[in-house]
Length: 72
Image (cartoon, rainbow, N blue to C red; front, side, top):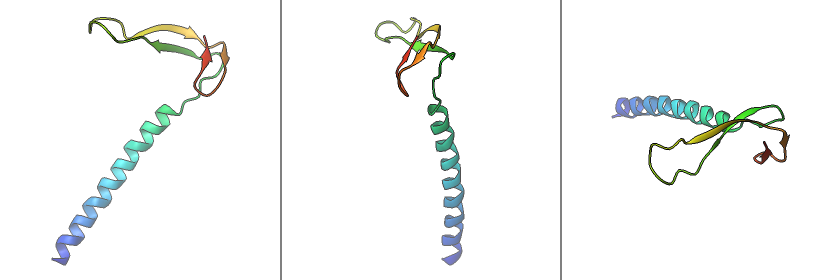
């Protein structure tokens, strides 16, 4: 029985490390700061048919108002 618990503990440790790695990659991808001079795409309203374009642009960021809001 002790061997089974040790085996499960080892598998849970590997799964925890894998989940942390995946979570950290997602957090780093979202934490990009938009600064003046960046070129971005903007997401359009997705109501309607599935064949519509989802993004428009590219646009040049002229002023960063806050961490989320920018002037293009």
